[in-house]
Image 1 (tube, helix red, strand yellow):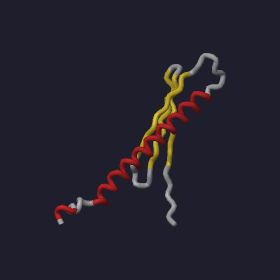
Image 2 (cartoon, rainbow, N blue to C red):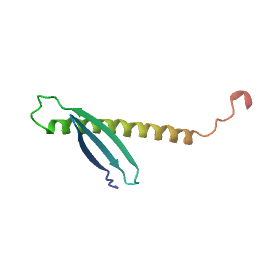
Image 3 (cartoon, helix red, strand yellow):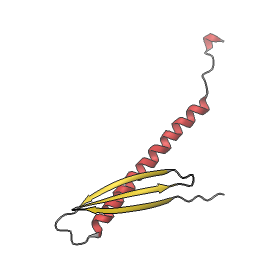
Image 4 (cartoon, rainbow, N blue to C red):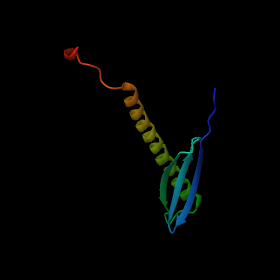
Length: 93
């Protein structure tokens, strides 16, 4: 059995009261997929990591949706390749 390793890096930046996160997935074949997330700080937030956690979580959710969409697109392309051209209809035989 072959083991594969994909890496996800999360980049977090703050802009005023907003925290932005970018989750970048790198696969073995060097393809990249990125997801993004944003959190807005409430004036009552006493723990600064809350914005980091929310933004990172949202970026990972977005990344997951994008990976699933890429897989669905790949599956549609592959099934079209395997189906081949249509054969003759019963009337043509």
